[in-house]
Length: 260
Image (cartoon, rainbow, N blue to C red; front, side, top):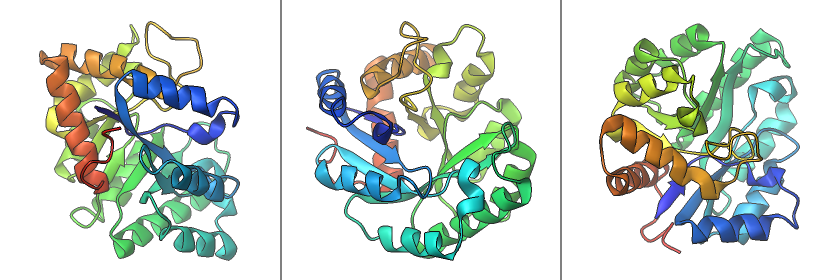
């Protein structure tokens, strides 16, 4: 059974979700990790996961777009929700200098606080990076060896991937690996190797070929696994087994989870 290590299921309408989950299970997806993005969906993600513990695990965190909102009240909510059933990570957190929805200094402060919270709580992190790798690498390197997590939908190429692996982190490979011009993502796959790869959809974004241009969903994570298998010259079954084992290891998922 496949694990989709990153899907924003809370971004679907409630009436759509049963169909999304049913199609995922029928496609062989036995587990989905659902990250929050900020104050507006922390409790929603926690409740969604609680209602589907046999299939879903969750993460709570403040995305860099929302970094300026990380005040004392939001910090208290985050700390409280870490003890909720099915919450296995802190995320989605990181840096994003493309849109600059929050100032750089607010993003860095929010990231560092949440990384320290992860280390204190013993939880892994789900990391977002866009046009910010130099700062991200420096911040992560200062905590190397004490931090566990995944750089999700990673596309920074060979040198950055080697740095991620050396720090003991995983790379998340999304549907971008199927895009014709995404040689940088395929370079990440070759550099990281199967032992450091998780597969993900980042639903509802980044639908893989042959569904590109449509709204993505976890059922299509198999296309990602197939592309990884092709790039590494492995069987698809081996990629599925090893990526799922890595997801269970990183997120400390209980035995039997993801086998619906």
